[in-house]
Image 1 (cartoon, rainbow, N blue to C red):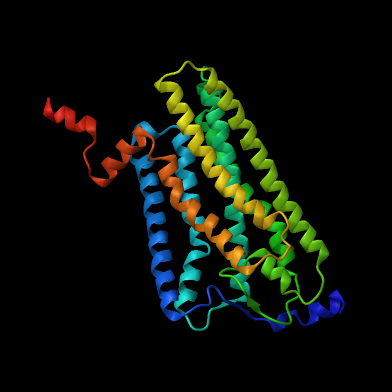
Image 2: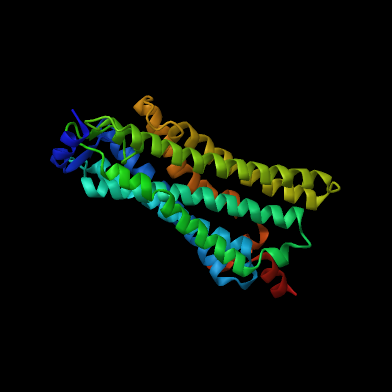
Length: 322
């Protein structure tokens, strides 16, 4: 079948069926409860960080502004696919419209690209703060911070625009069953009723460039940070800097490790169960753990969160006792 013939009948598919997690009803209800709890805790954790940064003037610095935007991104990121997944778990139809599927594809991967950009911006901020502490206030100004935030958000959406346009031109005229819980790239390409080598190559190139360029930049930044930290005399300052960098790099490793497995070769067909597990890991686990790793180890953030939640901080308690 030629591409022109396939395009003529591509409109025959008006919706897709997301199989999700085919199992017994009791297990599906259990999965619904677990995933709903993780989703709600993710929303609460990241929203608390945003409120803490917004309400505390002490946290109105580039580092925490980037963190607040990153937390808002995590909310958008996890909300781009999890609500539909939860609805399909308890639904009998498990369907998603053709337009809804393409929109979910675009927004999910735009958020994924923006996450890579924000992780790069945050590593740049830590590099300046630790390796160039005297020049940090003059380089990382609020103006530069605002430009980084805009670049991360706009860059994420623009990066996936071309793959999304190409995916909208892929002919779907046969099976419409996706053995996944959202409109992922690989399963969608597998349903094409005609070969689409240009689309596959473009998506693979764009995803590989975003993943490897941002990951290599982050790796280089934290390598320089680690070298600078090791030169600091042993003490609380060194331990604090090392702990911060280690936790940051842990999140980077978890996110990029799972993403590289899935999207460096989008045309490859791995076991559907493996695909779902890896996808669940980086689309639910990393947004859930990020507030804990990035913020709750930070004393200033802890105090701000206590004020937001109405719990007295240690400093306030000491002042009252005196």
